[in-house]
Length: 109
Image 1 (tube, rainbow, N blue to C red):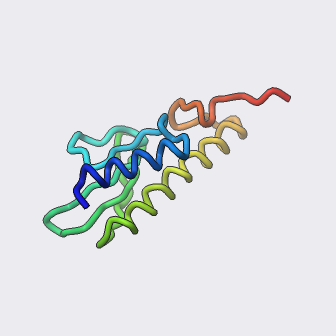
Image 2 (image 1 turned 60 degrees about the vertical axis):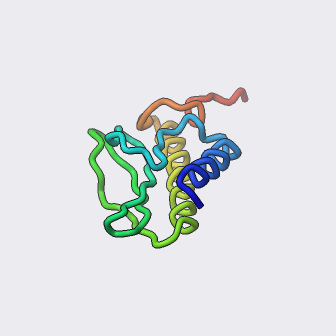
């Protein structure tokens, strides 16, 4: 599967989950941004790398996978965790990592 096909498949999955407002990067060469979830291919090591950045775009380790399917699963898991933790932060009054309608919306009760 070509990178473009893999990227298209991931973008479709992100849309189905309603995660378009999240900060993510799929096979892009641009410098990492703050609070961004990334999936990249490292041709030197021949592995897919999945990781998230923090404030000032710092990283705290990368997960490496030999095949795309495993990397894709981890990438989606991280996005799900981003939504979960930011909803928790908002509920607790801590403040989210960045604005998103996924956790900024207020329910009418």
